[in-house]
Image (cartoon, rainbow, N blue to C red; front, side, top):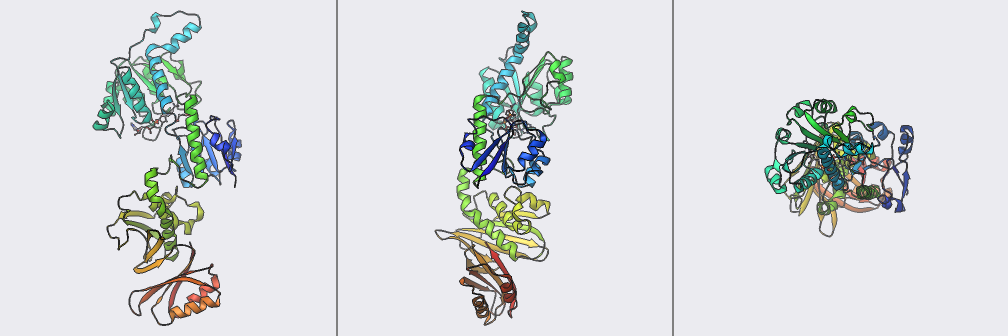
Length: 528
Ligand SMILES: NC(=O)c1ccc[n+]([C@@H]2O[C@H](COP(=O)([O-])OP(=O)(O)OC[C@H]3O[C@@H](n4cnc5c(N)ncnc54)[C@H](O)[C@@H]3O)[C@@H](O)[C@H]2O)c1
Ligand SMILES: O=C(O)[C@H](O)COP(=O)(O)O
């Protein structure tokens, strides 16, 4: 089946080659659509790829019933409504590594231009004015650069600044003394960084917490005559506050690659001679554009073909080593959840998933997510997927609990899914048997041995002579062949369970007749 990928921003043609060459993908390139054209085009797409220009709002997402993935050919995803994407089960992927070097290099270009007034001097010379006195700059050597946000780009900037023999002080919630020492920088609080910086550069994402992180109060803590750079996102620095600080001379100059609203051709900051600017060019190199387009193309293709992606944004990423350990359990977890959701009665309140044996030392959250998906599918259908399983559960007030347990019940690995409703608590456990595949080994307190696939009949009954025979006869009357049968009971004449696998789907009237047999309390038919 052909899958349609819509690209709505300009992307490197070499970078999207994997998409253009894929036989099962139809790539629609239209980087200059009106809003209405975008809504129309996205309604037919299974994937949408953007840069920072296209605003992927809730409205856009709601117009895209077939959309499975939004690819961001770059880092920042602040132009994508992540909540809306997650709610609709759409995975968002980005390309976090491809433009790091280009953006760090652009930051250094801006830093040097700012220190030496290069754009201003160039502008004068182009107007045939030979100005020398006006453009006396400052050296970088022995100056302190304060870096807020010590991620990929922040670290590369630090590396380069040290090459200029600058002192580097950095703040990042994930930075500690030890990591800072390893990177050869000084670790400080945001306040320390603001107070010590001769040049302040921000490299955080734009999120709620970083919006106007560098505001009036923050700028007031800076040294008089310090300079500010923003090659990350407009909005991290409060533009009005920056304007006042530069205009008053408190801040000697600023270098901006990004603005709160883009394009920003009329911005008042551009009227200040001490402010130099570029039109969001950090990632605009041949290399970066090819890198990000290639990375995002591969992830999009992989996802559309049902594979796993490298750079998910609204789903925690799993290393390939971990994926190797987890993937054999994916189907088992989903089927355990699917099985139990069919037999349980009442309103879901809590889902507990326990892992033991060789799963003790593994990050099992992806398995829990899949088990939850398996459970919720019964109620919500295919709208629930890996991306929105937890969110859907929490929106419905269902508590998810994952635990590791040392009780293996003799198995080398064991996954136990338990559902609590307002009426009852039911559980199911499964294992992967070496060389034999998946088995359901327990249903509530009954030990069983059932392959979790195909057509299954689960019968709760009272342990009485003849019950099994009557079930067998009735199924024979309906031309139903029994492939396997498992029986478990609590005690002689007590509650018992039968799990049968049959060769074809059980029809409704057959199920009703089974439920009418004496001593049979409940019949559930499943297709796994
Ligand atoms: N100008 C451009 O063209 C361009 C190009 C690439 C990236 N960017 C922007 O640069 C940003 C950084 O990119 P990156 O690849 O280094 O991302 P990254 O995720 O590797 O690093 C971001 C860092 O910011 C830190 N951070 C988050 N909140 C913080 C806070 N309140 N205070 C201090 N630090 C905080 C994070 O812990 C992380 O280490 C991106 O989010 C993107 O918006 C701009
Ligand atoms: O976040 C990013 O990757 C940069 O801001 C690049 O944005 P762009 O793809 O629009 O150049």
